[in-house]
Image 1 (cartoon, rainbow, N blue to C red):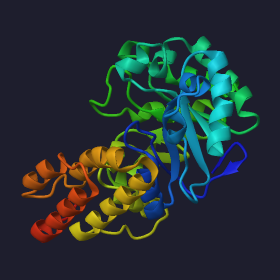
Image 2 (image 1 turned 90 degrees about the horizontal axis):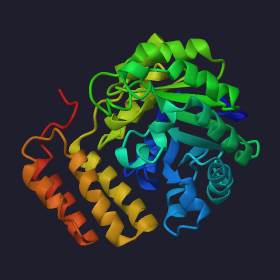
Image 3 (image 1 turned 180 degrees about the vertical axis):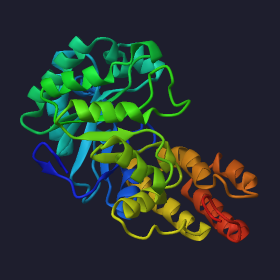
Length: 331
């Protein structure tokens, strides 16, 4: 598969998710599966105004290529300049535009999924980013539409292609659905039939079988995994094997899961420092324990971690007390 001039050696992508797919988590997922990765979304305005915290979100991991960085916004001049800055700061191969975020804080400002209510403006924003990207490929991630009564993803995809976008990713839910209900994969098929650029299929990929099915049923070029990877980066490993026709590896034992959590924590420490790494690993560690019987005590301890010493104490306790328990996906 190629996105513009960039060749990808995988048909699997990790979805960009704010507060989740930071450098540490992307690195872990990529090491397991070789998947294509996209940064967390970054405000184009914040980049243009020189916000000190924003550039760190654009940092790519060692060997994280090819990869994309994602920006959001609705003001054409800021998006054009922000695209150039994002690529310059990150060294990424591709720039992605978020036109699908349903969170009220984003959509109520006219950004994210709000752009689907104004395809003309969205096309101008996409064209501005294409200019700012200076020849590097631009992709757009969006949803079915604002709500059930205004599903416009097919026409929207055509507008994006017309604006010079090199690929589109479709999360097969509306903005008002947020993350509820079932994803409507039929619309991905319709988008794929309507455009000549690559289409990335996103929504309800929670198993290796789902990854195979979403490509078979939609004809899409790449499957994108989102929430299914929370605390379960091995889902990417399993999906990659299924898509390549290899034997799907079984879920790892709890000891290995905790070793991977520790690897993620160490990457976060190096990138973000002790305070932020500890705060953010609270939720990640709880996700790693999802589905593990008798884990409530350690989940509670995980939610109070404030030092690296406490993190390692919790991980050691989990290994000691719960290593004989089946984990998520075990028979």
